[in-house]
Length: 306
Image (cartoon, rainbow, N blue to C red; front, side):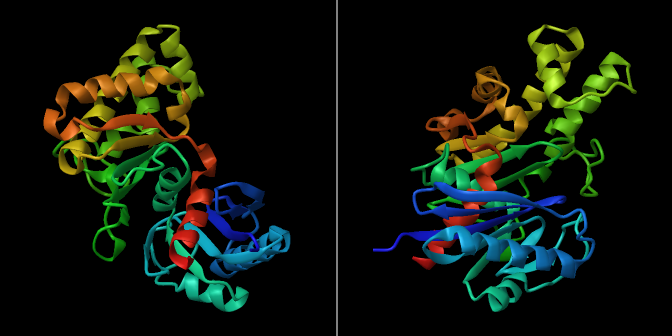
């Protein structure tokens, strides 16, 4: 029997991460398609179509379909909105447009959902039926898998995991609310906290530098990172108390800092989560890095076109 492939397109603010994936999760071919010159909705769609055709030429077998991870709210293959860094894409039937122009079945979902599916299908949560997936970076995104199904809430409007409220009337968040998990526990928040402690507002700082300073026991870095661990643990304990997942998977570049990162959060989670809810929950770092979205796009195709 001829081997089957899926094409994955992970849409970012500056590029498309594109690839051909086989059913066991091996990426057979991959490339980045820059979006620097794609300044309109039409141009971005044309870039997606061109990338799919390039992938199809390299597939070397039957293409089962195309999965597209897109930032913002996606309902039944329609991009409702929310992709602030991409022009247009308001109530746009992206799946139908791409399917019409390529001839392949097309499945579109939120990019964080696709990342979660990638870890569930091929990564750190493989074999689990219930997971919480978090990606920690500029903001905090995430995905839920409950009873072996991706869960997005009614009409796929939910699972905004970065926007549970940790503090009533707290720090303003980019979502328009206040006191959100993201506003306290994102890498952006960590950098802001560290910069305030160091009193060096003009210094170029990123999460990696803070982690290095933490490991060297810099006092400001120790304080900032410990606050970060505490905020992460508080949010995660809340998810555990509600969902009691088998695994909480933490992704994003900072999750690759080392085993200490997950261990510090897990220690704090154990102290504040309800023991019964947390009894079977394991915290783990994501395994797929920046390939998670692409692999999740492919896994979504295989799950729905078998």
